[in-house]
Length: 156
Ligand SMILES: Cc1cc2nc3c(=O)[nH]c(=O)nc-3n(C[C@H](O)[C@H](O)[C@H](O)COP(=O)(O)O)c2cc1C
Image 1 (cartoon, rainbow, N blue to C red):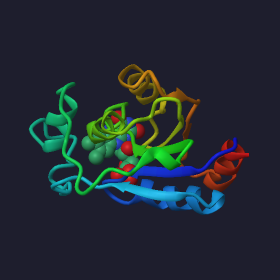
Image 2 (cartoon, rainbow, N blue to C red; image 1 turned 90 degrees about the vertical axis):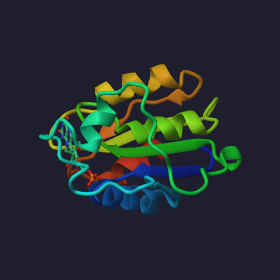
Image 3 (spheres, rainbow, N blue to C red; image 1 turned 120 degrees about the vertical axis):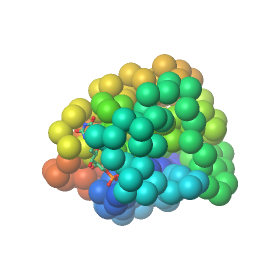
Image 4 (cartoon, helix red, strand yellow; image 1 turned 120 degrees about the horizontal axis):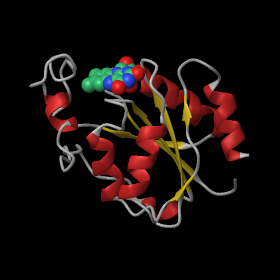
């Protein structure tokens, strides 16, 4: 896969961030961290509390949490490796803020995720529906396994 690559990722508690650094390091890609404004607290991430911030956001299809700072200039990139944790079988809503906030039309987008065990398929189909002009490629759940080898195979 030719072209300049950006690894864009959201990580609320560090797991996806570690994987994203391995992915980016393996292929020499630039990175962009999607940072929430305000950042998520431990209480925000309590999925057992129906009134926690993450529960309220995931129950609201139209919710688009704010991203801190500027979005990346996508004009120099052909490929985006997009990483996030699985929340309620999907991508966190702030990832929707990101993909709707930048121009991904005609760019190859390859998702990757970490989770407690759930797959990435629900996130992939949801994001394709939100952003049909991107060239979505099949993503990968990177719980353990060789993130660097996966990244090299995607960018070969
Ligand atoms: C609000 C919330 C919802 C989650 N929902 C799921 C889920 O549906 N399935 C799953 O396997 N793991 C779920 N998890 C676990 C995370 O996907 C997992 O811990 C992930 O590696 C965290 O990544 P991070 O440290 O980059 O934020 C959830 C975690 C949170 C905070």
